[in-house]
Length: 282
Image (tube, rainbow, N blue to C red; front, side, top):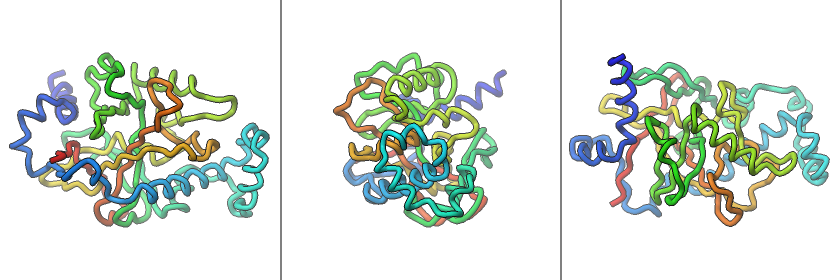
């Protein structure tokens, strides 16, 4: 019992603001410094957008026959994707195979190499160049004024953006129920505005595993970092079904906040991903 509590605390403490404040000086060598919030970009937003668009289009084409309801409503979209559908792509592949064929790598969850951690995320196949979107942080997006107290209790998966926006990436308990409720609330007929499959062991968007990336240490340096990205309003409606985020309060005027993980160096097959759980904006 005590061993399990210690393990949970080791994971949770990096999300606990009072602990961070008390240990900031001691943990200085594992901090990530950013001069100002506007400079917290490793790659341009346009590059993030193009990567997501390319990946989601490939996933959409791979499940082309399952998209009948959407294609019936958007015949111009059907024509567009028919032009992209090759003979080889008519064979249905797994999402991991689609990711490999599109970006040249796959990522998945497995037992972490850190003794103090449980699950981690690994590059299981291929090679990831520096400056590549390697995963996404899924979950419900909360603005500063929105209630998250009960969802946050004992929850090590809450990510805090620089502007105070929170993303709850927990795939269990109350967090899971909230995400599913918000996702189904925003569905428009056959158009899903978000992806629920990251709550399962087989996500249809294989990038949606970023919440399981572990914190770096003195022995395990960070090889990826978080980058915030607001999904533009012109994002194709038929591809929103692969976005692993949903807003807590429905507001058609606000952008959807996503967080992607971008590689800080080249990463080879078999390597585990490590991020930095806290960024200091000076």
